[in-house]
Image (cartoon, rainbow, N blue to C red; front, top):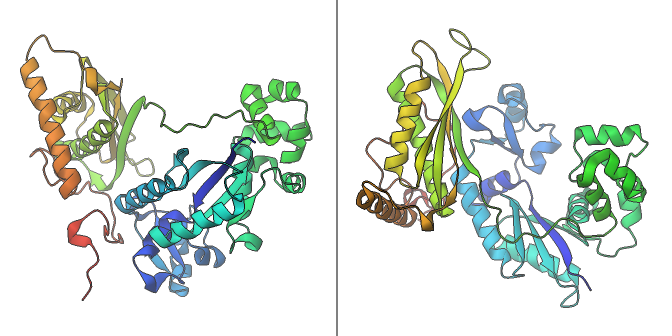
Length: 422
């Protein structure tokens, strides 16, 4: 028998992370806000029930949240990333074949003959909650597309307490696909759904039963693969290892508008530091850096202005010192006085493995020293916390810092903020 595919999805992930360390908010409506505390990006079930919709600006739902004594949090990305890492690492205890799909989702390859699939899924769900405090839902089927549908159904009210739905070779599959709107099928976007509806294909079962040559003409080979997946034919590969990154982006909207060049440079170098750390974690080095800045698109003063520029080097580099030099030269080209800037960022591109970097014709000794220095700094910061050691040109605070007036503590990533028992 072919292995079954399971999709594990953390329920209301950001909201669930906030609840792990504070038992007093477990039954209360809870929302998590976007960058600069603008809009709602995550909701607990209780918040959904009182009518808070995804993407709502905070000022529009503030009175509703106050009325129901709701908890409001700024995004705490360090906490969410660490909790995600814990969840994904624990999955290795149940199967060696794990594909991390997003911060709160992973595909698992499960052997049907080793154990009852439902029993195994319930065991994973129970232990995940016990070990991390994060509730999860699990959908099981023959393919990724069917597992996505099963997972979504597992979150429905009737199955919510169980949190598991097994559609692997299930007789229920026809009825469930007929109840699944075509726009809810994984991989079918808005335009594709319009094309299908024009041809009287309104649900997943109708797509499954449509001639594949017609689907391919209508939606290219991508749509044809989705139709085959709905029939239980595996077309989307199981990828245990992350695909090679082609670029790394780090950008933020400022907490308030910024006009001073030095303050913008501080922000850009801070984002560069985060991007370089991520690059080295993936054992990569960059060939180029792009810097971009822009005014507030809603209130551009004195007028709209945005620009970007790229510095391309002869050599690849993975050290902050060298890439900082590229970044400052690039920023100087695009910065203009007299504008109120609201956003900036960097993109590291031309990424290659850093294990075989080209030797330098000039200053190769300095390059090797920088490479070793960055390795040492990364080890120290990994052990003692972010920015324990950093370059003097990199500031961690400023008027450009993102608004996070409601941020919870970094319970798992900062020694000064861990829980204490009195």
